Amino acid sequence: MQPFSYAKVTSQEIAIATVNQDKTAAFIAGGTDLLGLMKDGVQTANILIDINSLPLADIESQANGIRIGAVSRMSDVAFHPKIQECYPVISQALLQSSSPQLRNMATVGGNLLQRVRCGYFRDPVFPCNKRTPGIGCSAITGYNRMHAIFGASEHCIAVHPSDLAVALTALDAVICIQSAEKARRISIHDFYLLPGETPEKETLLQPGELIVAIEVPDSAYKSHYLKVRDRAAYEFALVSVAVALDIEQDIIKSARIAFGGVAPKPWRAWEAEEFLQGKPINEATFRDAAAVAVKEAKPQTHNEFKIELVKRALIRALSVVGGKS
Image (cartoon, rainbow, N blue to C red; front, top):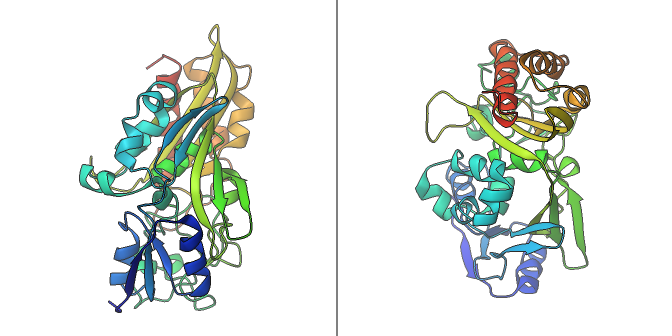
């Protein structure tokens, strides 16, 4: 691991200015992903800027929703009374994300920015376009059981690892960002990028910008998060699904669906949502919606099973939210 310096700051302005002055600097809060990347030699930083003392850990109710500070610990968010009552899909996603020890340390901002868990990306021995653009993607011809069936490209087929990001995508959350010059609010749908020809670019976050909060709008939606994985704890998703439904007299007025473990970003199932609108809550409706959701799937050599898994996971999650489980 390359030696680095460490600085603890108490001002957002100083934190951002320090990172702007040294392009190799990085913000650190929980450090649960960053330090692993540095130990593996995938990422380097000459100086780490500790932002834990910044006033970014509040969870505040607002007139039109809730604002979650970026340095809020995952455990604090998961067990927050309003989150559990009004946004259960967020709490469920966080509680299935990792071990209690990691949830007590990791922050929501860091969770949204964690890097892909592709073994070829995490091991510098293998060529990886995400680490070094133009060098090739080892996963395409390698073992790709965990990789994408939606949204991939010939340059990268890795999947986004965050459970929280999937839940927030289903709730139309907004990412609040601050730079030295201005504040920005970006829809989570736009925040994450597909690999295309530039797999090294994962988000719209620019150098020197800091995520300061996540805003989630109020809604009448009932929600649920379902995660399918190889083992019951501390494992990344093979397939996950966040479902939010607005239901009236057993008719779906509106639906929001996002998948995890299947694409380079949280994957919004727009066509399945449109199909469900105005449909009755029953097994036939859910089966047909699942078929729509996987129409565009393009599996790799070792992960065709994910297509059926997506369908079954969606049917199960819809059944839970619709009260038909």
